[in-house]
Amino acid sequence: MNGLRAQWGNGVVLQSEELVRYVSPIAQAPAAPGVKTRYPNLDLLRLILSLEVVTLHVSWAWTFWHFNPPISPVPTFICLSGYLIPGSFEHSRGLGHFAWKRILRIGPPLICSFFLVLVLAGPSLVAPTIAYYLSAGLIDIKTGNGALWSLMVEEVLYAQHALVRILGKVWRPSVIVVLALLSLIAVWYLIESEQRRIPRAAFCFFAGNLAFLYRAQLLKISSIAYGLLATVLIITNSCIRMPAITAIALDGILCVVVVMLGCTLPQMRRPFPDISYGIYVYHFPFIGYWERFLGEQSWWTLPVVSISSALVSLSSWILIESPVLTWKDRPWFRTTSNPSDTKDKLGST
Image 1 (spheres, rainbow, N blue to C red):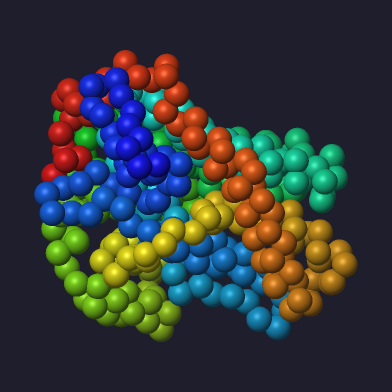
Image 2 (image 1 turned 90 degrees about the vertical axis):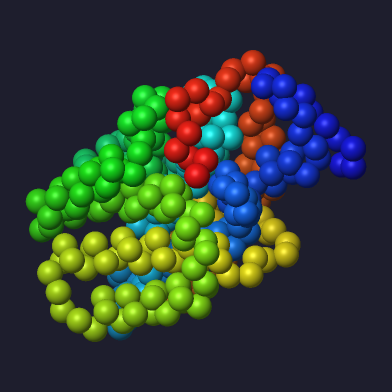
């Protein structure tokens, strides 16, 4: 790709190194002075979190062992989104471009996951699974994919972020702190309900937003300090009995610490296929399928489900997701200005 250039709508000419970000996307955030923009370690973090989710869901049915993840995978996933989505918005050339990129990243694997439910669980569960997804899990029905509730929550948070950013000066640390506190209050109100996971996800997303705004300062802290703090928080949450709301608040802090640890550790030299999202959306139908053959109490279910999900995710990445992501910057977005170039400068700290 040497010498490859592209003229973008705002008159900026991008070299081939910058175009690679869109062909092989790696977690990134806009640069503050002296701050890296690409963090391959965050892709590895997502992969680890997705495997945590698989292990957690498989062990639900086990009576001999239940996995208690040291790092809550879904809250950390959403905190990571809260850290990266502001950067995606600032790299966009308008609200439509931002939405288009989100659709291309989320949509194809989501549609494939419905097809996987059809094949592995049967047609009777397809409609309930779609309803479960659209309601963010608020509709309590039998579903062929119990992991999809968080996708709708994230999409609502993305839309909220775009709306607030369009309003310009509304997106500031004080407002985000208020939104995070309101989310914690909602968690406290729903503390006895499973639906507390929705405001808990929002709290972690806003925590990620704050980490993005203060990333220049946070990235100056050493990875050793983040590693020690993460260890202390994990031990505290595991060994000390405390009110549930306190544990959830500390867990949100742990999510931020883990994300910053991924940013401050030495970065991987080579990227790898981004199969973490595929594993997350594809694994659940495989659990029910393989349990019918191996039994709910078979430990073989975990490796078989993990391998099946990984193979399908890799095929999905190579054949569907990666090609589709090359459509991110179609010509119809060339003339749209970036909303963050007008009022909102808070993201460029």
